[in-house]
Structure formats: C-alpha cells, structure tokens
Length: 147
Image (tube, rainbow, N blue to C red):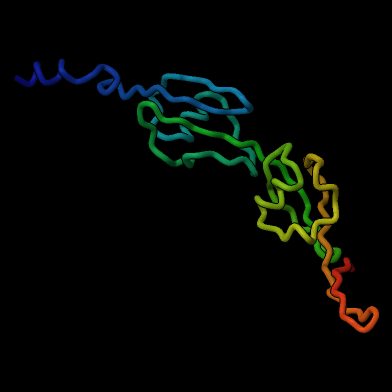
C-alpha cells in the first residue's frame, strides 16, 4: 500500500525539484532547481542582488513549482533638498517622473528635466516653492515661485 502511494507522487515532489521563471534585465529564464528559497536559488544561479535591487517575492520566500521571480535593478541617486543630499535607490534607467513616483516626491519641487533618464550617482535637486499673492489692477493674482 505504501509503495503504491509513493509511486503516485509526482517525481518533482519526491526530488523537491521546482521549475522557476526569472525575469531579469528584460529577459525571461526558466530553470529547474532543488533550492528551498528564492535567495538560495539566485545564489545557485550566480545572480547577484545589489543594495538597491528589488526582488519579488522576497529572497527568504520558499520556492514552489511554477514560481515567477522578478528582479528590478536599482541604482543610487542623491536627492538634494535645500543643500542637504540623501542617497536613495531607484529603478535604473527610470525617467525623472518614474523616480518622483517611486520616492513619493512632490513633482512641483523637482528642478531637473522631467523627460530625461536617471543615471547611477545622479543628484536630483528639489526646491521649495514660495507662494505669493500680488495685486494687479486691484485684484489678487497668485503665483508659485521657486526659491
């Protein structure tokens, strides 16, 4: 009875072998593995994860057959607010608008070209807006001017 039950179990389950798909740098790779976690699998495949890279599911997540792993490469940028720079990680080759969304920044404060791509090590300068009310011909006009 036990022997019949063992033969009914799929071979992959007995061997703990999983087919995993990795999405990395614009390409897709399907691999078989006996690794137990995403991190173990990536190490087995010699995929290095940088400080600002994002991996989904997380590297400590257990593997299962059919799992899809997505790796988004990140790079450092410096966000400068009033002369004080702070390093953040953003998606490499992101546009300025994409970086603004990733970091949750106020788009009105970004002083760099919005259509350009972000390069590793780039400094993004934020500016503070000063709201003014000016009377013109007896009526108020509001304006926002960068400092």
